[in-house]
Length: 88
Image 1 (tube, rainbow, N blue to C red):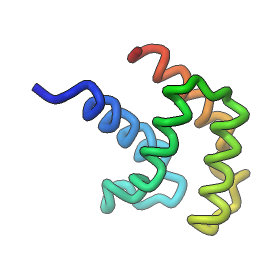
Image 2 (image 1 turned 180 degrees about the vertical axis):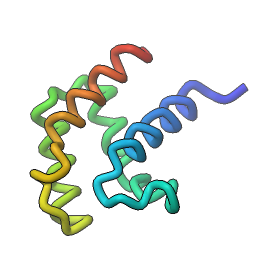
Image 3 (image 1 turned 90 degrees about the vertical axis):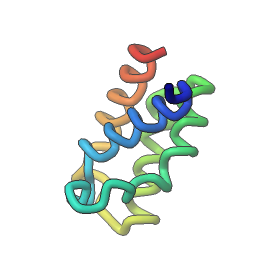
Image 4 (image 1 turned 120 degrees about the vertical axis):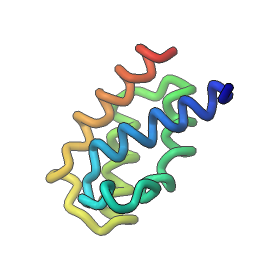
């Protein structure tokens, strides 16, 4: 049986791959793993949606070189908070 933290990490990876702002998740399943630990830290300390969306916006723009407005980081932040609340 897998540890709860592994299940949480796997669930978060799945959400990021469904979001897939680059459009490569079908071929590269770990493309967004660089965001796992920072997001889990924020989620576990109950960061608000503004802080999470700021982090996502920064990653999209500075790390991936994308226009963050096209990927709607605010909506993804809300989805992440809802997911964490539902999974405990």
